[in-house]
Amino acid sequence: MDTDPGIDDAAAMTMAINSPELDVKLITAVAGNVTVDKTTANVLKIVHFFGKDKEIPVAEGAKAPLIKHFEDAARIHGESGMEGYDFGTDYGKPINKTAVEALHDAIMAEDSVVLVPTGSYTNIALLFKEYPEVKSHISKIVAMGGSISGGNMTSAAEFNVFTDPHAAEIMYKSGVPIVTVGLDVTLKALLTNDSLNKLKDMNETGKMLYGLISHYNDMSGGANGRPMHDVNTIFYLLHPEAFTTKKMWIDIQTDGPAIGCMVGDIRGAYHDGKTNAEVCVDIDADFFNKWFVDQVSKMK
Image (spheres, one colour):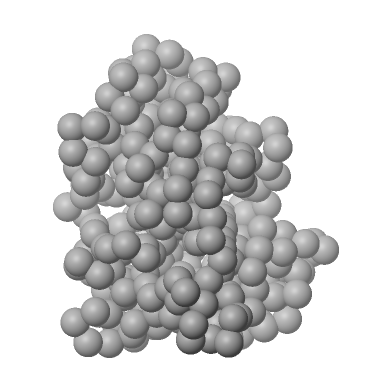
């Protein structure tokens, strides 16, 4: 996982770390929702919370986008990136490797891995440029980001792609199979208020998530609930049958007023029928809520 926690990132890590079907080999942090020192600390907090310090290494990554000026989302996630729960101060340190070095070593040690970026794609772009050989060891990328129906940073651009559009362009041109989990589904799979309230007294994990999500200022779901954008990547890995997808070619706008816009060739008309992504366009939101609550009920 490559992430920028961020409250929904924390929930995504929670689901991944505790899933018996997934084997999390490494979590790397990138500047995004808050600065990289804070996102790294937040990854360490979640890994430590679940007692996985010795099993899951954490590495610190890029401090800024490749070219574009850095713009965080502290207004959404709070100054620390994970307001709402006291994780203490003794949660360890990242390993003595950069995110790119750690990603290279972890990926090359396996025959095949799934890469799950839930923040800006800066680390991924740097990895592909410095170590292109890793591509043959990645079966697919399941990436939260983008939208083919409108954005949340501008009318055109979603936050992760907007943060570093040049990195997104590199990733989508990499030739690695990509599943795009964007706003087209994450704004449908809202964690309802009823589901959130069930977490509060469920267990310590529920208390933690309730605290974080209650401080989450992403109100794009309105009165219907909170969007758990990044969690949808983990939900996809475990339950792809809950998603409707469409294969298409994705281009990324890297300048001008539409910077960060994801453009999908929805008719297959402009790239000789070629595709570079499988874009999630619909989701079973009721199943998502049931799954989310059921998963937390099994945790500590």
